[in-house]
Image (cartoon, rainbow, N blue to C red; front, top):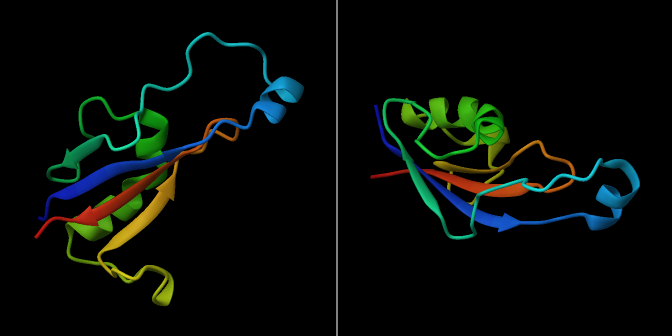
Length: 100
């Protein structure tokens, strides 16, 4: 099974949506742009957000088993995917890619 590198590419905060719909919270996300994680044996890396993991895990599993080419050529690198967590107020985009 291949190791999978997970890189935090971008964090966005939709403050207008938060102001309109979200109850105030003090702490939301610990991810930092450029931060990397390695998934070994299709396991969630320590420190990776559980919600983000649930969004990306099917793609990690496919890549770990040498699959890829999601959605018939969606990514320039067929052994990668760009996946975002499911936080509608503060989405974080992750690049997941097979390590050679």
